[in-house]
Length: 384
Image (cartoon, rainbow, N blue to C red; front, side, top):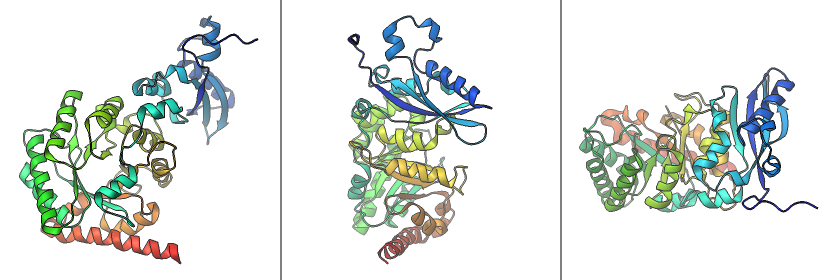
């Protein structure tokens, strides 16, 4: 007869996938066994004398499969009980010490329902963003306020141009914070005033997303300012402020949609589809910005497709996040982007629009019109 479980142990496990570089299958299996221990008990197996810990806590290697030349995909079963339904502890158990190993990359995990309930995911999601922006049947549009170094009044003028030109969401560049040349409160007030002015002129409201960055105390104060000023969205980089802090900020202090920025996300050996498309979504990002292939960064077409898929795919109890391809995009690529991502996306063009200088209002309208035209073309193709 099986002994009853020790109090606090459920015996439940969940699978985690890693990519391991190894010369031979034997080396890969050895690495997998070491990984299972490192991500569970962090001691050699012969140092684990407690039978319950051996049976219910020690990680188990499920399988090891080739994954290209010199690499293997490893699946390990970890104990749900080790997570504590806590964001930081979950990340720790997924990829704590092992993130220090050059030869190991975290690919993904089938997170247990208890973690999904604790995190909650986006509060608005794709449909909520569409509703707030009044947009159906096409991708949303986004533009960035750049370059940093400009005073609040100059950023507000750019904000007005974009909003009057029909852009749905205007975000701060992620490098804009609370600098002396553009204090957070002054910038937010000026840009939100520009948003209201453009709405009065055009009859159509845009959302302004200021960049929130800093310590937890600073972030809470910035969130309060957004609420007081009636701001409609926020931009936060989860990897910069810390993913547990990001989750708490979204869940407890922000009442508006949140765009997750990828700054510093490249500093970890975590597969971008899982980190950007899955984890950022789980922690509350309503939209996820990432570099599209062929721009300034090196993500491949396959990686971009996978990020978008993990952001939007059905996940019971978790709303979808809107993928936001960015990074060196220009208006000429709009038809390609709409063809690649379809309607549930937000197209972000920053520096390319600003290069228009005095012609920025016209270039902004061309961007908005290009998205509408590409969406109409896609709809006709789908109906044919």
